[in-house]
Amino acid sequence: MTFDFTDMRVLVTGGGVGIGLGIVRSFAEQGARVAFTWKTHEPDRALLDEIAELGGNAPIAFQLDATDEAQVNEVVALAADALGGLDVLVNNVGGMVQRSTIDKMSLELWHQVMDVNLTSCFLVTRAALSHLDDGSAIINVASLASQNGGGPGASAYGASKAAMIGLTKAWAKEFAPRRIRVNAVAPGLILDTPFHEQFNTAEGRAAGIASIPLNKPGYPADVAGPTLWLANPRASGFVSGATIDVNGGANFS
Image (cartoon, rainbow, N blue to C red):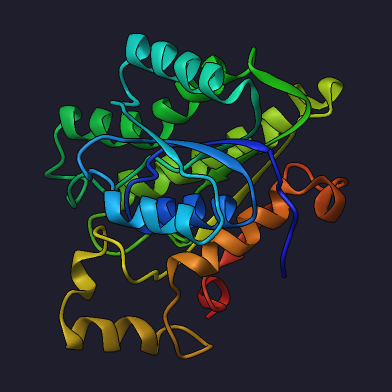
């Protein structure tokens, strides 16, 4: 499905690689003006130029540690100023940080996981609110782990993503007077990302795919599609507080 996002102003956090980059590319190719943030995975400049050559607007990149309050406030303001405001915010920053069973998990690691997945979402959304026009859209990128707890050693990650879905529902109510819709997507096994180390081998990928009813993995474009749908007010203007599962049916297998 194609949407016309001509001149729509979009901010994507964690947009330098994987799912985030797929979302950035899809918005830009549909005519949106996109700013995105990256921390450790610097964007491929050649790919950004390629997006522009294909007719999309060249995305604007900002380096950001989304767990740092001062940095978030500064960068979100810079991005909104560069775009002339915001119509869409995609909270995509996140990661496992490190797998650990609860008996071996340090309090420091627990806080790290919560900060990168949940606190970042809070900080960026709070900073963006004054720049989002009434009728805007916020999309939070959660995870299948929010529903099934994730694999071994992923309890902190699963809890943080479940909390993100809780925030999605709470904010859908809180921001409703301004007609700002808040929804989430919950990806499962997505290849072409740096975050699924267990699927780096052929055996690991085969095992992961075997657990998916559709018997195939997903790719960043598979997450970008529902994200763009949720961002488009004509397609999903009466949808708020919802989570779209993007996992090939793995949540009920």
